Amino acid sequence: MSYGPKIIDHYENPRNVGNFGTQADVKTRKDVGVGLVGAPECGDVMQLQIKVDQATGKIEDAKFKCFGCGSAIASSSLATEWLKGKSLDEGLAIKNTQIVEELSLPPVKIHCSVLAEDAIRAAIADYKAKNGLPADADTAQSR
Amino acid sequence: MALKFPIYLDHAATTPCDPRVVEAMLPYFTEKFGNPGSRNHSFGWEAEAGVDAAREQVAAVLGATDKEIIFTSGATESNNLAIRGGALMYEKHPAGSGKSRGHIITSIIEHKAVLDPCKRLQKEGFEVTFLEPPSDGVITADMVKNALRDDTILVSLMWANNEIGTINEIPAIGAMLKASGREVIFHTDATQWAGKMPTSVDKDNVDLLSMSSHKIYGPKGVGALYVRRRRPRVRLASLVDGGGQERGFRSGTLNVTGIVGMGKACEIAMQEMDRDTARLSKMRKRLEESVTAQLDSTQVNGHREKRLPHIANISFGFVEGESLMMACKEIACSSGSACTSASLEPSYVLKGLGVGDELAHSSLRLSLGRWTTDEQVDYAIEKIVAAVKKLRALSPLYDMHKEGIDLSKVEWAGH
Ligand SMILES: Cc1ncc(COP(=O)(O)O)c(C=O)c1O
Ligand code: FES
Image 1: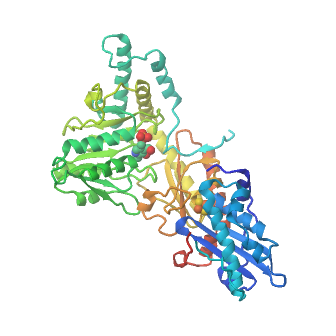
Image 2: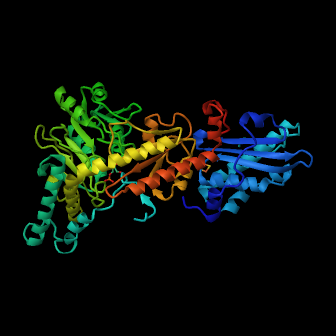
């Protein structure tokens, strides 16, 4: 697979790698939303965590980990950059097509960006569920 | 010496031509360009002399006689001629009779150039048993013995596997078949073996053997099929008809330059076999040991001892194949994964051995060659270890593993 410079850059210098605690920790943290999508059998697992400022409702920090191809790593890295500073609704407005465009993903790699969009939605849905906020009609986790 | 990148560690895919091979070939392009079938002038005689010499060189590496060597376009064609040509010649009942045309034994970890001809024969009325090796990847004489039937006509098993480098018990299987007194033809795809390891078709009781020139520092597009002439005299139905070259087994004007190159490659192989084997097996062991010592959740695939000197196949837990290849881009090697990762062709060989039954493994096949240096191997070790560490730092699965979570028990939202 020959990739463009933006994918390579995110792959070689991934932004915001990490998490806000172990799986057990983040499960109980109300200010953290966790999205874990994909499956090892499929060769891709993406984990996206958002930390929300409870006062302003804005995403103050985002972190990812990804088991997957170069495009999946780049897509999730980019997603964390875009999420920081956004409100939940603004986060939900991020579309996979924007990721495709920004990174110039080749057609066979479009599903990697879909996975990133799924991860964003799953993380926000998790945060909402933990805080008793109404689930967005559009946050179906699986498609 | 400064390292040049990328470093070629994919000699099981193909090898560079030995300069001595190229030199031997050159005159046959321009001066000795004749058709060996031209019997009435010196151009033809010269070309024929070149082919004859090569036939002896190839026979020597196999412990065969020159009359038993059929030149082909490579191991793929040799395998097809052996399996299809053999099955059609020795069938028990004709097509359309409603009875099984004959039984063939092979294995699930063969190269596609064996599997696909067998599957085609299966569709055409032959019955095929695909043996499944245990996790060490070795097919034994007992496994073959247990699969034999009264209507078995052909056994086709590779001598050494191209992905994991394991060695099947070919001499023991040959001896068992011979002792059984049955009329079963024994074919081996020796593409990864012949020219690298000592071979004696007589002592090893092999009837048909496929080999390829480009795996042993010869040119591409040329190979050979050994066809036993005595005890028993093996017959084959030809697949390519025409001018009747190669005793009618394989028509078509001979690829003289290629054949001369293959002959020279075999001659050099015989001279350098012991040295190459000693050097490469030491290097491979160092590679395997140092990588596995520096990384947890990593395993070397295939039998520990019954293996070729130059092929290492290593699986790494919790890293994905394509990103691993990206992280090792200075190393030219092959990758495989046992899972159906969208970005990688899954390896049916590794899957067949049960590698990756634990989730999320990917594998690298590193194969060393005549000009591989210690510096190159050192670099590869360092690079692979760094790549796996980097990707594990990114891998949510590695975190889960460290936290003691069983990945097979997680409910995944697959996409
Ligand atoms: C075991 C085995 N059989 C057959 C082949 C096909 O050989 P060739 O490229 O000469 O057709 C290969 C090479 O990829 C091989 O490794
Ligand atoms: S995430 Fe499946 S190939 Fe990229």
